[in-house]
Image 1 (tube, rainbow, N blue to C red):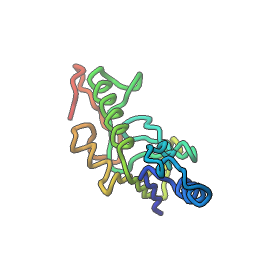
Image 2 (cartoon, helix red, strand yellow):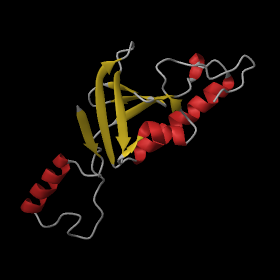
Image 3 (tube, rainbow, N blue to C red):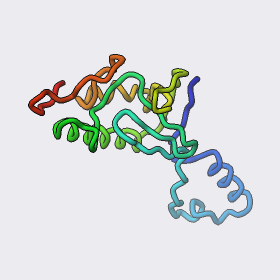
Length: 156
């Protein structure tokens, strides 16, 4: 099942409201040559970490199917993992914030944390592959693998 969210800056509700306002009056800000206020976002997302996301409108949490990103905070096993995890989280936030279109393809599975396992595409590009290309993730191989060697250095 695929779910598609458009972030074109104008929601269907905003379009309907604009049509109604234009029908009622010809003195809209646009008609007067003034900029209009930005329309509310169609979907609000919270990036939890580089491979975990929450749709704030529904409360659904998603785990990317195809990648593993380093842990952040106290779950990181070394400072190098934590630093890379923080960078992955920030880059995921940037990708999500700049997306014009967000497509979610659910796999029909959930993980042990009750997250929905899914692929996410941003503007037609796979988010997991984008994160790997940035050096902030690696392909998911079915189990968590360490990011740190015994000396606290990053394993890639």
